[in-house]
Image (cartoon, rainbow, N blue to C red; front, top):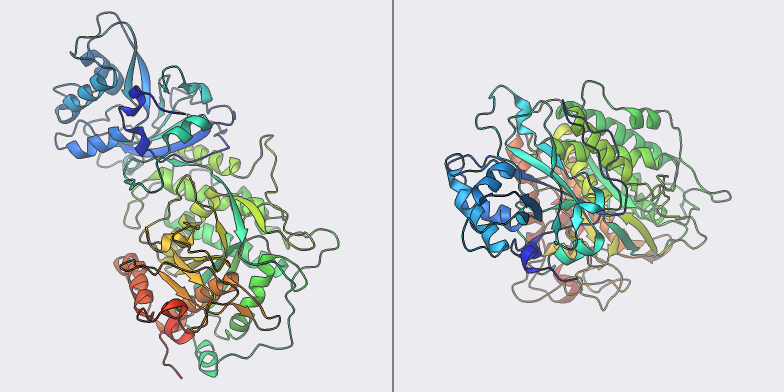
Length: 616
């Protein structure tokens, strides 16, 4: 589907739109106007936060251009004898005297979109305008901390809000501003049909600015496990490790670091209970730190999890170590490290990517809810921000997004995957929302607990039409397996998420190598001149079975990086140091590789390098 000239007047090809199968379905409230969410009609739900202080005489012309560039087109009605000045004053609260910094630019954009020569060349009927918010109150109360939170703007016509004949949105946005009339920003929630979103999606090789871009509630995502699931036999006692490493792990840790393994299932009840306790405690810390509870805290999922003493497995399927799931094999791959961690400096938490097991739905929903609510409250997420309790409309919005995050078209919990087949799955279906919001949840937990996290993703995904956004300046790192196809260069094929080890450089890619060769047909990285790769190679073989893959290299690297933070590195003591921690870790990781070597030896690292411990 191609866009018309009217739509492209706003250079909509630069819009980053992402897919959502769910819609907001909670009660929306305002002091005088109720906001009704769209029906669950299969449209694509998008959101973005944009400024509304267009009255500011210093409002940047470049900022306004970027805002208009990445705005959807919307149609409005022209009345008899209307001028462009009348239209922009009525719909945007913009005028020559009130908003002089943007008035001329807005009028010119509208003229170009509608092929108008003069301001007075208007006839009663339809006019295409950029979908911008109305200008905010000029002098918001300095004593109202709620004004840092955006208002919520919705078009309440469902997929019918898009008129294909006009190639534009229709209808008047309804705005909720409970307790924050003077807010200088607006969160716009819009719905598009799938084919329209595809026509507006930005090419993946295009440099899309982050400012004012749309994000999505959901993007269904199929991931391929980087190794076949297999039984994970466990011998007697702890597997032997290097005595020098054992000595480090037997000392008293300086802090506790968390490795989060996002994978197909909980291997056993023990891992479920550890995940349950982690999410409950993290939720309480996050809620308190960032004031994410309203007058009546929403604790249903926390209460449900607190009462659970185990998860579920299909009849006749034994849990770890007999369980044939990918996560069970990962647990076995970490056994030599975890078993020897006498100081308990590294905590390993398994998070499932679907809702097949008991307890997964409330656990994942709590993660989504808190992450969404924090982002709805303020797009300027910072530990330095003065946080106020959320308003009802914000809570309802976040609850709605989280509840629909794991429901099918009938509103029932959808078991996205069944990892309990006799041989285990090669592919599983999950959702972009979980990965994106889990990363944000972990950032908030690290800020609240002042302890680092390492998110390990031992699977690959095809190149995405819609990008996933990860939080910056996090007190944590993300790692992704390169995969087990020796002919594949993850950067040439843009294998998610390993390819992001070059651009934007926010993920550590891990290949399976021992310093002399690739192991298990490991995929590899770009070695082109001048290409900087945030990647390492590490052995990923389970000694008891000789079973190996990047699925096991990745969590092992994450575990050893976590051990360095727990036992060796001095913890950052200020918010500024924690905000710089991630950048410094990336620089350190790049410096430890032998880039003068060729092939796999360029990126291979030892446990001594990962921990910055003396070599034997």
